Image 1 (cartoon, rainbow, N blue to C red):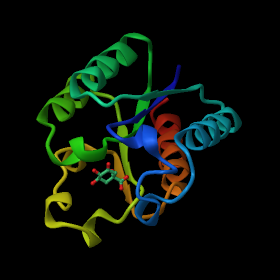
Image 2: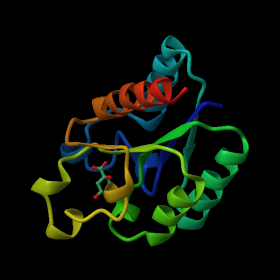
Image 3: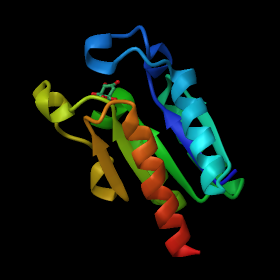
Image 4: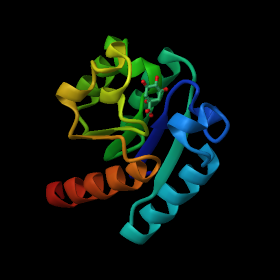
Length: 147
Ligand code: DQA
């Protein structure tokens, strides 16, 4: 695996969850699209969704051991609460691009702060599910530059 795509809590319901905010594309559609894009870019993409903070922390460490070169992550609500996920990224010392489907800055104040953004290699917000593809394109360029 070269890149791990991580989706956090409630993103398993993408497509039916609050479509006005997140659209009607399913998580499976997103994962297929990013995986296919990865193939075109010569990157093996693995996909992981988890509703639990510790599960995401464990997967980040495991990915490092598996030779992963970087991450695309939509941390969902953990964006706004999780020091543990930020610490995991700091520990593995690999680049990650943070993506939010909705424009979190146009929403409730509690969504304006991200624990992850200050250490992210890029942040994509409010571009809908297309943001996942934009995030992978940026990460692929970073991986290329570093190789
Ligand atoms: C989200 C924004 C978060 O505030 C929210 O908790 C989510 C989805 C987005 O993709 O827009 O679960 O990360």
